[in-house]
Amino acid sequence: MTRVIAVSNQKGGVGKTTTAISLGSALAERSRSVLLIDMDPQANATAGLGLRAQWGKSTYEFLLREKALQDIVAPTCVAGLMIVAASSDLAGAEIELVPMNDREYQLKKALDGQLRDYEFAIIDSPPSVGLLTLNALVAATEVIVPVQCEYLALEGLGEFTRTLELVRRNLNRSLQLRGLLLTMYDRRTNLSRQVADEVRRHFPNTFRAVIPRSVRLSEAPSHGLPINLYDVRSPAAIAYGDLADELLQGAAQKVGVAP
Image 1 (tube, one colour):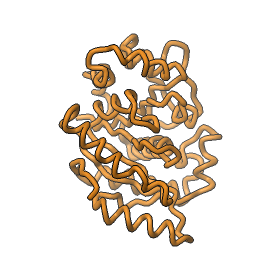
Image 2 (cartoon, rainbow, N blue to C red; image 1 turned 60 degrees about the vertical axis):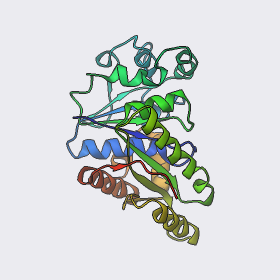
Image 3 (cartoon, helix red, strand yellow; image 1 turned 90 degrees about the vertical axis):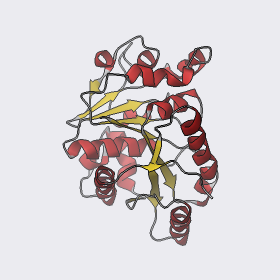
Image 4 (tube, one colour; image 1 turned 135 degrees about the vertical axis):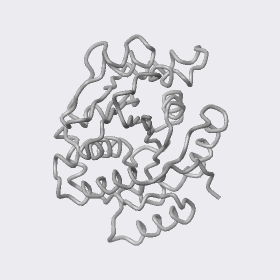
């Protein structure tokens, strides 16, 4: 059965898209078949892999079920990693979804029976809790929540986990919180250590893998490459490899609410 993983956080700038790209690439590097679904109208995951959506072949058409998955999926520079590219048209989909019945289930319905060729489907969701993010969470079986190791990143984290619990109770009973991922960790600062300790204290299922702050990781998208192809020896590439290994080894945990 395909593991459908939403990478989500209502706060922007926490490494969500970088995680979706890097984790997908690391899993593909481990001989897993992976589909990356870009659900963000900014299309950063698409651009980060050096691509742009072709006319009429984007997440927009797929979400509104104008096109089947096989008609819009595209290869990437990583063997084993395919993508459903996003375009700015996706912003209009949020408005078009409003009057629909079961509007939160449109992505799930579009994916139904379409993922047999993939072991993993990773959904990069927008930095908000709108209909696009809700569609990602309803379609997913698991959620990874990137958390930037800075003080302001802690604000809203408890609220977001409560949102996940509401989604699980009312829209997707099978949704599980796979774990929180510490990102942009700077081992030179006390603040990063304090934030990491606080997150681990409240959320025992925080991943052991920690993504360091890295210039090379920031540079990679401008070259249209995931970090493991741009600089395989960088600490960030190694950390995302560790995350992929941890994901393959561990079992998903139920969504919980922060104390």
